[in-house]
Amino acid sequence: MVTIYHNPRCSKSRQALDIIEKSGKAPDVILYLKNAPQAEVLQKALNDIGRDKLLRKGEDTYKEYIAGKNLSDTQLIEIIRKYPIVMERPLVINGDKMALGRPLENIKEILK
Image 1: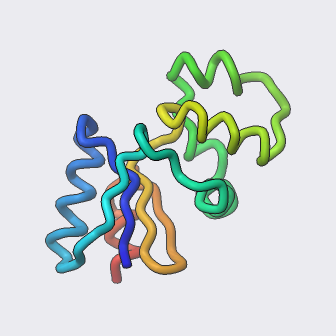
Image 2: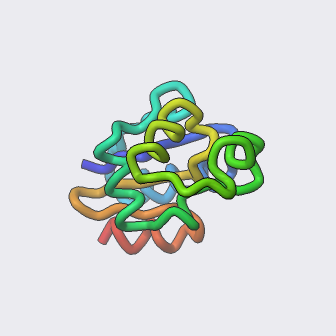
C-alpha cells in the first residue's frame, strides 16, 4: 500500500501523485494539512529523512516555534502535528520505505 501525504496546491505534490498513479498503484491520499500524520509516521520520517529535509524553514511557523530551539523529537512531532504546514511535501510511504518528493526521483526509488 502506497500512502502520500499530499497538498493539492503544491506542484511537486501533484507530480508525485501522478508518478504513483502511473506506476499502477492506487495510493491512499491523505490531505496532511487537514489530517496531520500520526506521531509514528513523523518519527520514522525524522529517522529516515532527517529534520533538515523534513522541515520547511521558510514558514513563519518554523521561525516561531522551531528555529534556534533545541527540541526533542517528541516536541518537534507535536509542533508538526499542530502546524502541519511546517512539514515538507510530499511525503510518500510504500511499505516500510519512505521518501520525500524533493526531488521526485526519491519517490520513483521507493516504488520499485
